[in-house]
Amino acid sequence: MLLVCLVCTFITVSVLVVRGSATLSDVLRLLGLFPFDPLDVLKCMLLLAVLFAGPLFEQGVVEGHWRNWVRWGNFRETVFDDWIGWRNLVVGPVSEEVVFRSLAGSLFLLAQVRRHPSPPYPIHHDSP
Image (cartoon, rainbow, N blue to C red; front, side, top):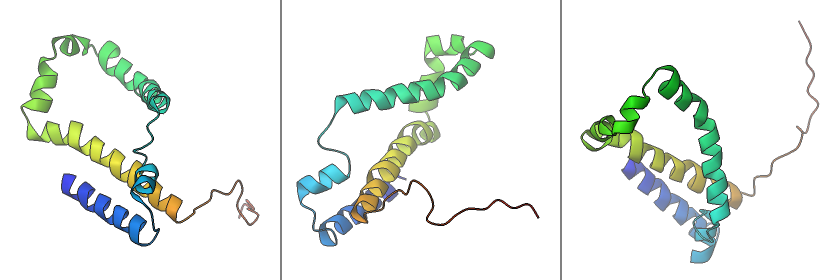
């Protein structure tokens, strides 16, 4: 997974530099790495906290797994003592965010993809 992320990063940077004539600062800006706005990071983390509040409440309070969370033993066994846990909980999410947010977004910006507020043709919903 990490190798795929590195290859995709290399390809994206190559496309940005060769086809888009981007400088180093342009590449860092298009990848979303610089300039760094702490307020945007805080907003993203708040959104994630709201999105995961429901499943965490269900798992912790409704199903009663909060006792395991307090001890941290299960977390250590799952993440640090097992390669599958490391892959699923650390490497996978990090590489997914890098590939889909940074790399795909910068290529869309380079291609000048624009969002249309409405489709260019009328949509008719007819029943058969």
